Length: 291
Image 1 (cartoon, rainbow, N blue to C red):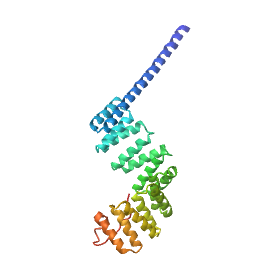
Image 2: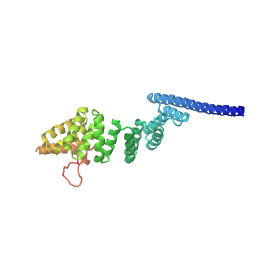
Image 3: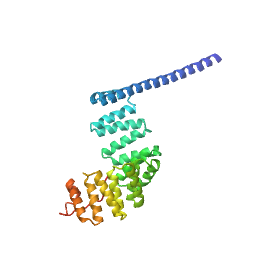
Image 4: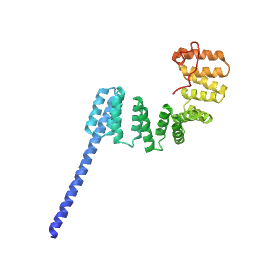
């Protein structure tokens, strides 16, 4: 009885060994496929850099054929599709890549940007929320989420997100700009000005930040300071109708009606649509600088 039992134990052991070997071989085969797929992606990138997009696209499709679950290949294909204006198709590829690599924050950013460009702001925000949950200390994820919320007009939700992003990355200009906008839209004018001034320090050529700071200074009744910022905005963006509108408002606030009229005229010349068409001769400001 002992010998048959020994044979059974040995046989079971052999089967287990064969199963283990099969798993190892499958993993090795998959690794080789991924490696080959990645090499094709690199070749595609090189061809793209040489101005040969058609050949590059062929290499990317070959990379996916070799390893259909390679997120890098799907991501690369998405970039080619976006370059051709095929956003919906690119979103499908980015979703596939993101499902294969759910921890990849870069993929989430690209997918959220594609969703927003395709008109799905809600989908982009949901994805950025998930990314921020997975990476709670990723300042870029939080910054992009705050930015998306502000663009959708949800300053209340954006404020704590923007505060967290700015605390994690105080030298990230967009984080400070978002914080300034969120504070402004929730009524904290001194806090908004502080963050906007920090954003301007980090990127002095950002005319949008300068215009926003001008508007906040105006609401704080610091009209002379607002005028200085408005003049700076026009210097930075001389062809921007909104910059001239901001300057016009600041000039009017300090009593320079002639200068205000000239600034309004310049804004109207640059973009007649910034004026209301239902009041002939009227020169009315829009609600403020838009991002």
